[in-house]
Length: 121
Image: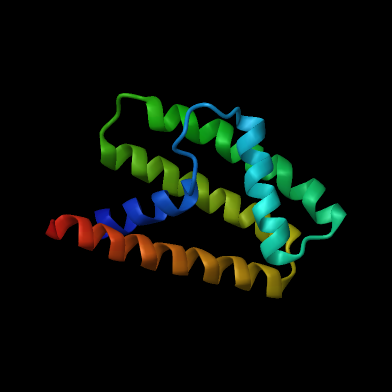
């Protein structure tokens, strides 16, 4: 169950990071744009969020591509996601961070349901 939870968290973190055709900068920009729309980021906040997302994407891709076990990858990605969250918490208001956290929970819930449905087939 713990492994499933970590897997869901990781999937949540990567969202649409499946395609290999975009650069890290493009992914970071897409993630930042999404947060800007969802959380109504100010221009100053957007300027601070983009480097956080870029660092996350740049560090996550090598983890995904390495030859470690899935569990080791998931653990590393979870740690990276937690670091990103702590950095975002410093930039976002309390209300924005609460909305961001709630969105992550909802995404995890949806992914968990999708995972369960796929296991049944």
